[in-house]
Amino acid sequence: GAVVSQHPSWVICKSGTSVKIECRSLDFQATTMFWYRQFPKQSLMLMATSNEGSKATYEQGVEKDKFLINHASLTLSTLTVTSAHPEDSSFYICSALSGRDYNEQFFGPGTRLTVL
Amino acid sequence: GQNIDQPTEMTATEGAIVQINCTYQTSGFNGLFWYQQHAGEAPTFLSYNVLDGLEEKGRFSSFLSRSKGYSYLLLKELQMKDSASYLCAAMDSNYQLIWGAGTKLIIKP
Image (cartoon, rainbow over all chains, first blue to last red; front, top):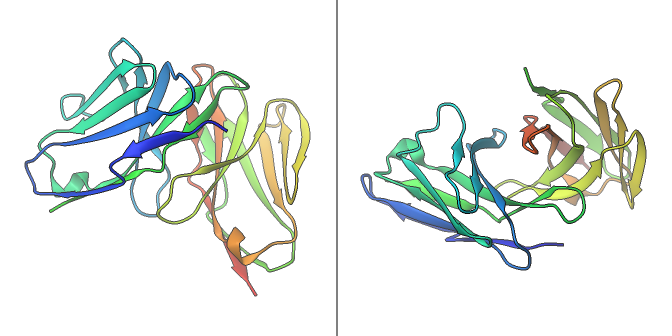
């Protein structure tokens, strides 16, 4: 199956700093990527839909100025958490949409962010 | 509105069979997915159904009834490693996945 990577896999930062998370589709081109956040013992929550070459579409309640998304190429989308605070600590997961077979989403391994 | 319902938690015995049900309501429908998620890890794909009926893949099978907005995941010959959360997700007309909260499956020896 298709492979999606995320970097870093975990990060610890101080409150007020910015953190960038990369999501790459390794063996296919993904015009659409999704960013999710998952708090402990809760389901995935879609934050935004990232389309290559255009602005991301954010879900209601997600601050676009705080969670900056850039999908500059068909294989890379980045999520930058700006001025991170402890409440932003979460598991961030990206997925890439593959239309080859049946529009399956392939997930990255996730990035665990801890803001001190 | 869009909604996915599945049980919060289920318990089963090693070697047995368990069925995890899911009902969904979405704006348009482009298929029903089941994912397995172990604690601290990203979800992994298990199955996809877009037509009515049963899809079998080894120990796991998935069923879909579009008219009833209903799906189930059937796990046979349960193993301890099957202890995980199982997420049901329906893809809507915009190709977005609408996620259930997940069913935590506990396997006992």
